[in-house]
Length: 195
Image (tube, rainbow, N blue to C red; front, side):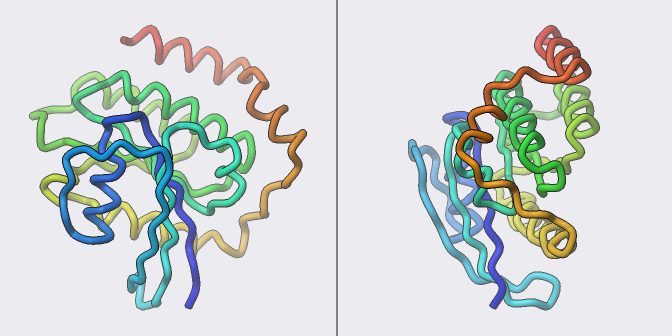
């Protein structure tokens, strides 16, 4: 059985655990503060039995970025400020491996009637960092299975072309303390000024 490793990250309170537990156990948990949890689930994706290794953490991904094939970045659609840290996380992931599978998931869309201004920021982020986006709700079980399956499908499709990232501690320090390129820096400033 092939294994796929996915890192789930986001700010406190965006619903990371709710999304993961909805997928793993099909139950909804309102709030469970987490530093790091690991889950495993066997699932059939594109007619193939897979074992998904899912690690949940906050936005501190410096070591985890080297050990995962895919990234599920979760923000709260009712709290636009939870989107900005995901831009920083995307930047860090892309500095290590430009071909990693990344999906930005807007959770709690059952609480809003329209996406508004944040959809412009999401589109910019999607284009800038070449990531997939999806909105849903852990509470209503909307697009939870789809987001996990979409990441796994993309990993399976890219497995032959993704080069493993370099595992050097000094490289890790340099990557995460480097300043963004001019283009990324201006986009980041535009993103911050939108608030």
